Length: 151
Image (cartoon, rainbow, N blue to C red):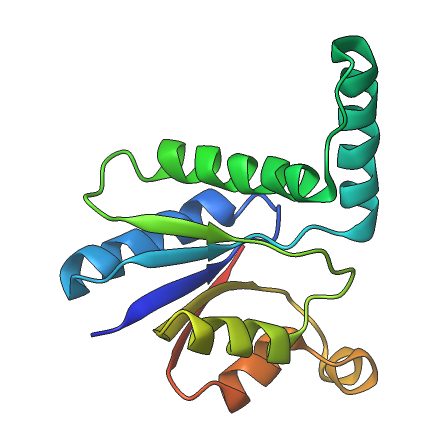
């Protein structure tokens, strides 16, 4: 059994999604890869905050350290949500303003994941046709299992 990729969307359902993925991982003896994308606005906010701290500490912070803030946030959420589970996890993040199914699938393959966990959204068929739906693309294109949790 391979590992599972959990797509965190910075929404209320992330903790429940993590627990659902952890229950699977525990039973399947798999590890979790937590994907926590950082929007451009969140990235800029993190860089700005680190710049302010840097002025006080007389230190320069890099863009990688700003991304590290997102990784630490996802890691903290996982530690809190998964305290009752015996499961290992790692965190992957990048800066993107659009949650892209192809990027998620590539990341899952890179980390050897054969199962995806993601949150779904309620959308009308017209909304899916006009705007597209990342979850639908994952279900149709990912070569493994996809678990969609509706919140």
